[in-house]
Length: 92
Image (tube, rainbow, N blue to C red):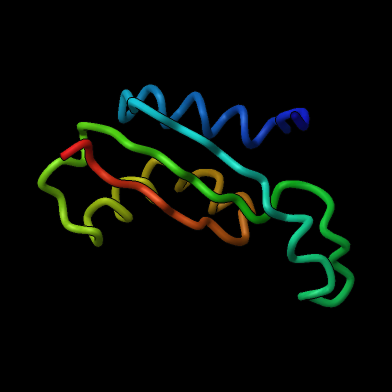
């Protein structure tokens, strides 16, 4: 298991507090994007995937689920998080 960086840890805390998920996985996929931008070597925490299942999302549309997750991550996005992949669903 790889060590979690500070951004991944922070997002885990924020997702748990906001959505009380039954399952949660925050994955740093930055290394998969090395070379996609001039000078980007895949280091750091710029490309993050959120996988989550939470009762909170029951009955919500996909668009509203993405809005809710993006709102929780808004400070990190404003601070330079380049990509946020959202694989999230309700429990039902």
